[in-house]
Image 1 (cartoon, rainbow, N blue to C red):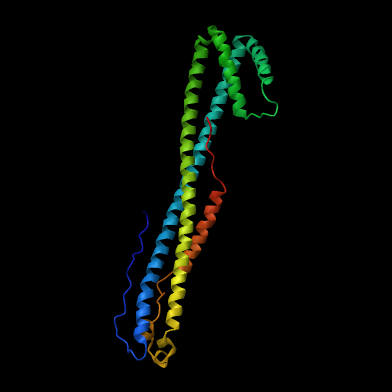
Image 2: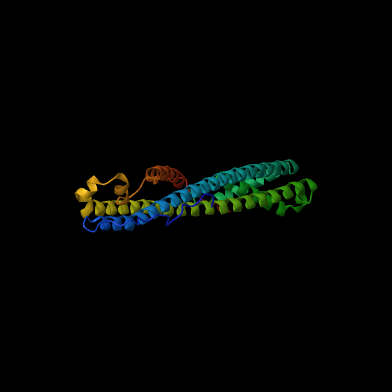
Length: 267
């Protein structure tokens, strides 16, 4: 927790005794009843909004990490495709284009077994071609035993491991990100509930005090400012509007991240 929590139960109760005939005792009682609740509701707002700021910052950090991992995967896939191409060129060179003719025959056979509406991504097509190259090398192990082929095949296997590891890391980060987004949604609702609780306490307490006998009487009108302060709710140290604005900013950021939910990769 990177922020300092606002303390609870810090309200100083009014101890002075009023005149029972004027009704000031009732006013003091109401003030002492609602002021602690109002102060604690404000502290709860402060803590919740600071907590949301911290969690939103964490979501942002995880989001950019996931994006960075995705770029890393794309770079690995590009390097893998270069290795595929190198292997294909080597096969064509060593076999005097026999492999290219064999591959065409095999691909045509596969097409007859695939629904014409089925679509493949570029990576799917590349992997299909690589599978065909491996199948060819199994049919003709003489080529696979050559050092030139062995070197490139070892590099491809290593690159495949790197791709899989990068995809695993990405999926872990995506899962973490999507979980944090769902938590953030619930915490925003909690913050809104805390503002509603504060508003209700303020409304009810003010109405009770305004309608009590002392507030309506002449003694209240003639009382000093310090005396009036004793029988009214004090919000001078409260910053509810400031925290409402902060909450609205955080909600805007949340909507942006929610609109870009990341999807785990299959591999």
